[in-house]
Amino acid sequence: MNFLGSKTIETDRLILRTQTMNEQKRLWEILMIPEVNKYFLTVPPKFREKLKDWDKQQKFYEDDMKHANDNNVFRWSIFLKDTGECIGRLSCHEGHDEDESINNPNIRGVGWIIDPKFQGHGYGTEAAKAMIDFMFLECEIEQIITGAAICNPASWKIMEKLGFERQEKTKMIQYTFLDELTEIYSYVMTKERYLSLNLPSRRE
Image 1 (cartoon, one colour):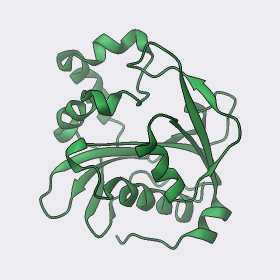
Image 2: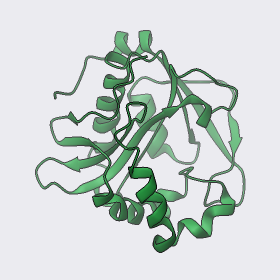
Image 3: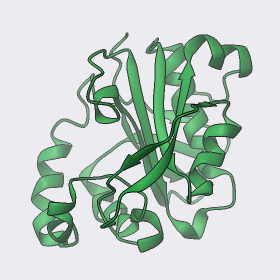
């Protein structure tokens, strides 16, 4: 694959930018909304309480932002083009974060969060499609694997809208903010399938 880093991506309504410390508290506040973090896998549950404390998290984010411009990091903050407001973030991470058996940088996972105030307007789909265009067309990855809680249709409907193939077998995983295991759908998208279904949707 081509390690191009989190270059700026522009869509009709959004700008996806490399993350900076400027918007990290805003993104953390979004993540702390129960309907957002309920099905978001951030850290093991044992770190749940620490994650809720901004004063403890600030240093982590400061250290993390030192690598935001590395060419092997693919994480973006999502901004509304017309107002400049940060409404969420998305990432295309290494596949072993989704499945520990994967050891191939050409197989990636994806994830995103959107402020609930801005959900229902197609921003999640628009941002995800632009990111996936970039990862397949320019970074030339081979495959994306991901998953979503069965009881969280807002997430898996985006995957299906983008053409991801739902796998027959479901999985049970432990989300950060939930005590019980949760059943998820697993999804796969190959570069060949994506390009057969989609035309690039972004501009730089």
